[in-house]
Length: 505
Image (cartoon, rainbow, N blue to C red; front, side, top):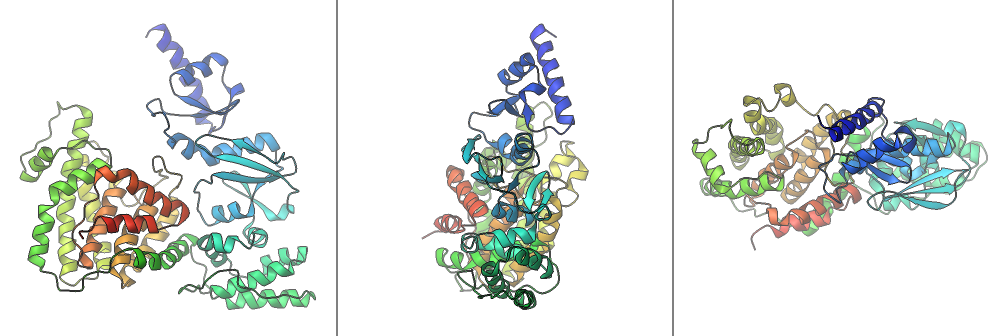
């Protein structure tokens, strides 16, 4: 080992010790100047703001936001604690998002603290923090979630602005659905004499079908001689109601998204052709599109495959060549897995064309697609067999996205709800658009979610008589931006319009 490599190894050892101690926000004083300069030079750390760093991968390209997005929440928790001690908490609105399990990155994180200077602090990739100089709520109204000081759920609901109900109705309805009793809300309302807010909450609970909670808030406020004017803060009602039983907020969020987004999909995606489909002709057309579909779907995921390789795999003539370069070997494994998965998807398409419920067919078959997709990697020893055992066991991040998929526990709540919604949905256009989007929103696997999402889209296309549809790699950026708009801003229109543009005139 030469002298430069030896010094870099020493610096990396110091970085490893920090990471082993779960340090995400690295202060300059935690590394010597020489170690810090070497790590910066070789791309192993990056400066977020003066004196603060995060670990990065040296192969990241300029402008790559992945390391920052994956570090954001842990960085903010550490930075705020160093700067303000315990005297800070996130805004009520941001607290609501975290309570319902949505850790999508905000463009600007609002923080309440008596030590604030009412100025923004710029972070990486256009994100920032704004510390507002305000007194903190009562101690019992602050809780800690994964290192972050947030309003308790009752306090966050009480202190959220009226505009939040129209700006983020899915978030607010999901948060309201988590409340099973009026008592904790009443404690906050009565302590502050919040009669106007009480009227807003009464209307909000009535909007989601929680009449008992609404009535108990009214009774509690009136017992304290406080007059309450009931108002519904939501701009519309939706065809979904929540019973008394506590249900996972993640499951409720999926159902609310579906209910809110479906009307937009119907407006922006062509109605399905109700004429009978010639099954033999339809399946022949699916087969004809295989090479094009495989090339584009794999290319979207960053694999370098050629139509010739795909044809070789389809013919059964391809054999693993251990002398191949590692990346080429991975590309070939991906192509073989795609071919195997395509065979399973065709069985599902045929079952749907024969009259099967598309949601039920999907639930029965999609795990076979996943196993087929990665089976060649297991056979080659590239992937561990245990990695194919069900849903992901840890967090996952989407490259360059501000959206953070739900944690492993939420995945297990969301997937059954997803299948139920598909099975119950009568509109084929909604099944196509939301079938694809909601699956990748849940992101149940460590890898393969995009490919399976496009398979789901095409299974749902078959259920409505639409043709098998290819998402071209040339439009990848537009495709990913449309998914980002739906994931981060709950705006499904760009994605519905994008998929509609792929259909033949």
